[in-house]
Length: 446
Ligand code: C2G
Image 1: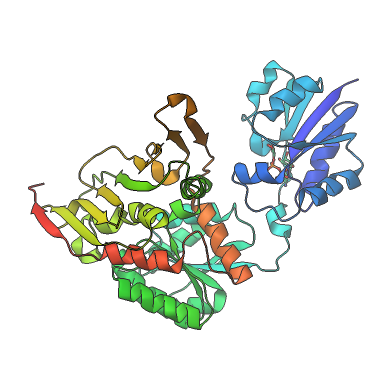
Image 2 (image 1 turned 180 degrees about the vertical axis):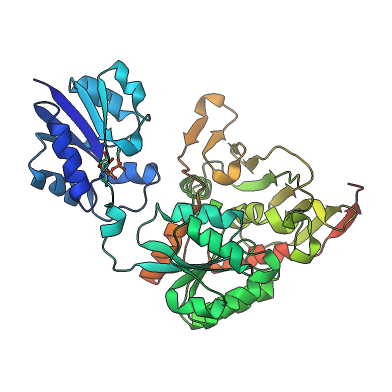
C-alpha cells in the first residue's frame, strides 16, 4: 500500500485545494491530510485564517478524498509524521517548491502545480472587511503592503502621496486599485488609513483623516509633541475611531510574554531598565539626518525604549535627564535618556550615528531578565538568578517584519470597537512626552 501525506490550512475550501487533494490521492492508495492547528498557524505568522480548525477539518472530510485526517501542531512535525505513519510520498503545492526537499531523505517529495486564479484570500467572508488607504510610499510602506497579505479582513485599496508619479509606480507594483491625486479623494475609497510619512507631517495628516471619519494607524513617533497626541486621541475618542501608533514591538508575541512575566514578579521588583537601540544610518542625505523633517536618533528610535519604561515602570517619572550628542548639522546622532521613578531607574540609549549593543536588561530584586539584540523584536529572553540552575530561556516566533502583528491588532480594534491593551492611550501620550522632553546638548564633530 502506497501512503501519501499532504499538509495545509484548507481555509474556505476551494477548487485549488480539491484539485491538490485529488492529485495527491492519485499518487497512491492511502491519503493522510494534515490540517494546521490554530496555534501553529499563528505561530508561523499566518494570521488570516477565517475558519476554525473544526470547520477546516469538516471541509477536508466533505471532499471524501482523505483516508485519515490529522492535525499539524508544531514546526518539525512533518518529519516525525512521515516516519510514524510510514509515508511513501509527501505531496504539496508548487508554491512550496524547494522548501521541503530535505524530506527526500525519508520519502519521495512531489510538488504538484498550484491552481491559478483562486485563493482563500479571494473567498474569505468579507464582513468586517477593512479597506485601507496608504499615505506615503517609502521603504516602510512597501513592507507594510506585503505584510497585509498575512492578515485577515484587510486590503490596501488606495494610495496617496505628494509625488503622484512615484505613487503610481508603487500602486502598480503592489497591484493597488486606486492612486489619488488629492488626499481628500482617497477618503471615499477607504475605512482606515496607514500613515508612513516623515515625523513632522503626522499631526496634520492624522487630524485630516480623523476629521474625515477614518481610523488611523500611524508610524512612530505618532507626533513630536505630547499635547498633539492628546489632542488627536481626544478627536478619535469623540468620533469613536481607533487611533494607534505603529510601534511594532508592542504587538509582538514575545514582548507581551516578557511584560507578563515581569509583571508577574519572576524577578521580584524591577529597579532598573537598561535598553539600547542603535541603527547606524550610513546615507547622510537620508531623512533621519534632516532636522527640518524631525530627524535625529531621539525622534527616530527612542519610542522603543520608552515603551519598555512605561510598560514596566508606569508613568510616575520624578525626574528626567536627556543628553543628546549633535553633529555639525544640529541633528542628534546619539541620545541618552535617564528616567528616575520613586524606586526605579530607566537608562535608555539610542543612536543613528554611534553603535552600541542593542540589548535590554531588566534588573529586579530577585533576578534579572536578559533580552539579546534585537530586543525590540523579542525573539528570545532569559530569566537569570543567582543560582544559575534556575535560569530559564524562552524563544518566540516573529515572522516577516512583524508589521503583520500591528496590522492584525488594528483590524481587531476596529472590528470590536475596543481600544488596544497592547498599546494604550496613556502609553502613547507618555511616549510622546519624552520624545518631546527638555535635553542637554553635547556637540560632536561628526
Ligand atoms: N493550493 C493549490 N492551489 C491554490 C491554492 C492552494 O494547489 N490555488 C495548495 C497549496 O499549495 C497547498 C494546499 O493547497 O499544498 C493547501 O493550501 P493552504 O491551505 O494555503 O495551506 P498552506 O499555507 O500552503 O500550508 O504546514 C502547512 C503546509 O506547509 C502548507
